[in-house]
Image 1: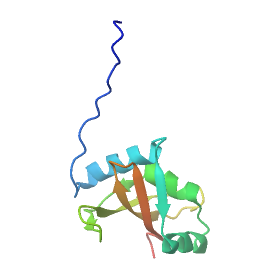
Image 2 (image 1 turned 90 degrees about the vertical axis):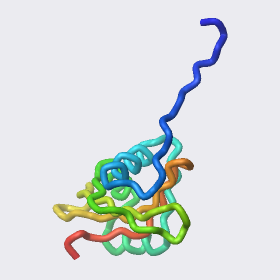
Image 3 (image 1 turned 90 degrees about the horizontal axis):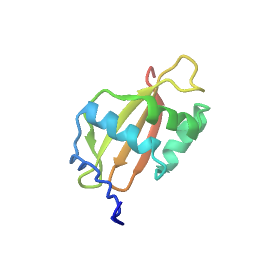
Image 4 (image 1 turned 120 degrees about the vertical axis):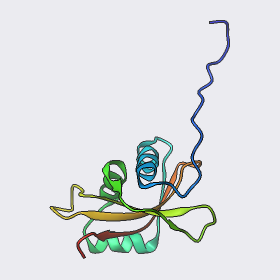
Length: 119
């Protein structure tokens, strides 16, 4: 090499709202990133405690789950809430839904709430 640094070019991030397939892909990529910042609301933490679920369960769902519906606008302009679903290690045979607001640019996921799908 001639001393030139190799520049890694990231593909541009699509503006929100994303399709369910795009939301699934972006949320999964954010969730597995070493740069992830996970933010949980007090409500989400209370819901997790009530269901005996842990941060590891939420991360499992964000890494392995699927977004099945279109997102809903959040209170923050340009951001949307997405419902991601999956079973997790501590959910038994029940499916868990995590409502998250992703920020792909900052590699952040804000967890709004956590619930059982069948409730």
